[in-house]
Image 1: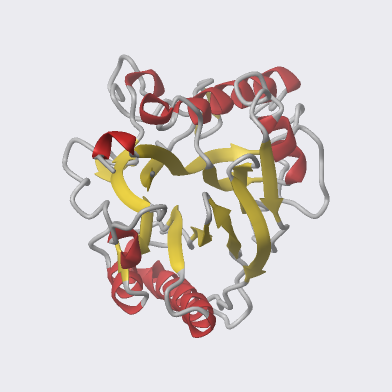
Image 2: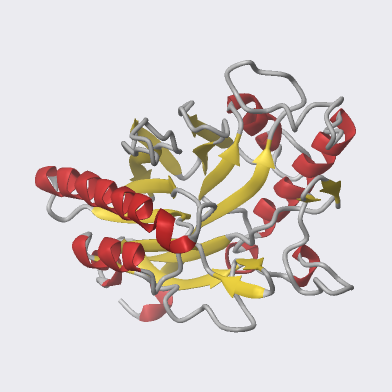
Length: 321
């Protein structure tokens, strides 16, 4: 059989921090007071609908050039609840695609969770579960953060395990908060070990807003102890990243994967490429923040953009005969 009989299918797996995707309704169990129509931010139905429209537009374009369709799997951060996810997949740019939702409420103090949407025509969920990270604050009281989401299922004809993260922020300072992110990294390694105990050859995709760069201790710990490859290690530069803070680029948004995605076998998922989705339309087009992510808010000031993060993605190929 010659190589002309081979057919290559490409799947995109993406991760996107949506920058506070809150609905406009008050929820006593959430810290959503900033995101209400009568709040200082004036979070109205019109602004909410505009954000949904924009986010769905972005998601629909990630990896589209190679696949002619939106991503098969998208890990998400900073969603308030299942309703906002439903509104997202039913908005203009995604409604014609058959997306499903995996979401659990966490006890995060800001009231935001991680989640996953997936193309039901190519990915079948078999199992999902969340894991909490036990943290304490300076006075020894429990400090709540986002749960880690595990979704296991079949992509193409292979089982893959997606682990979706949004690790503790650097709000108290990078060094002061680092032990919290190390705890999160340790929890992910525990999850990986448990999966590999049952299936030593498990295929893993670990994605998230890690609030650390590829060179930081927590990510190094995760990749070495989880036996993962980080294709994003070389992408961070003085002029490129997934978010910008004080005019300095960071690459907190990353997708790592198990090294068996490098194996070349027929009908098996294989790593092809990774990238930051930082198309020009997603950036501030003028002023001192030119080139940075075009955000929804800067502080309390409404800008009407997409998110303060760029999405990141990997593409996986399957050669069929």
